[in-house]
Image (cartoon, rainbow, N blue to C red; front, side, top):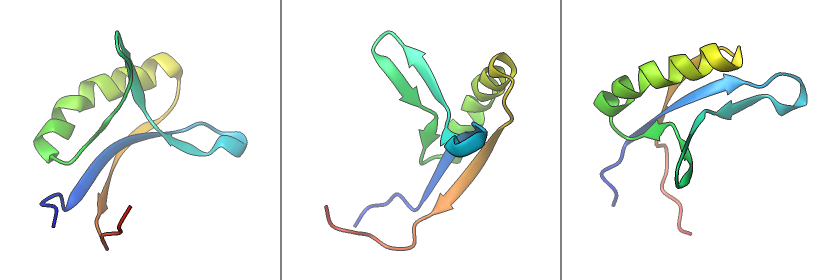
Length: 73
């Protein structure tokens, strides 16, 4: 069983039919979603998420998800 009990994600409202989506950061390797299983790492991502919100004009918020069940792939 996984030790990961909670996820933290930065999301933004894309408006219209798109609704909310996970905020990502473009790196040299591609897109990195701003999602982690550790609160201290999420806190370190906050300045980047805030800056992305400022650059895009979208409200960015951090949300946490608590695992309710584990599903097989």
